[in-house]
Amino acid sequence: MADHARATITINAEPAAVMAAIADINTYSTWSGPVERSEIVAAGPDGRPRQGRFLVNAVVTKEEFVIEYTWSGDDSVSWTLVEGNNMIAQDGSYVLRDLGGGRTEVVYDLTVDLKIKIPGLLRRRVQSGVVDAALKDLKKHIES
Image (cartoon, rainbow, N blue to C red):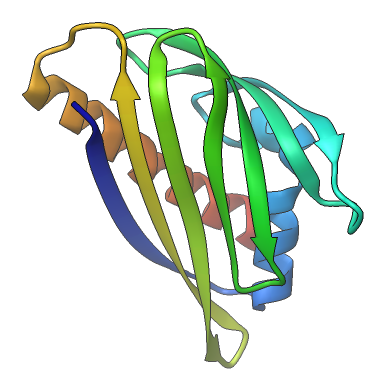
């Protein structure tokens, strides 16, 4: 069964700067706690990643996976799972909203369906923790 998590954060930066940090997946392991390795597998015509490979320590398991991105300027990016070890599906997105004054609201949605059996409450806590940590790490990375 798929689990969904959503979180929102405000970052003190313009949407273009936020989206540039999101698109720079080769650096995720230097600033995003659970990401141990990340790389661009294929780039799109705009230079942004079309596919990325990740190794993530998700507390209950380490997961290596490839996702495919769809970019919409500096407004949003969505992705879907291409291949994964313990996941059946992963769909996610970052949606950015310009708040003016050099501030951007970032909404992160993530839906994951696992192959492995993990109790529902633990799955949901881990997923919510991953989403919250990702946003806090992104904010810290951009604002530092």
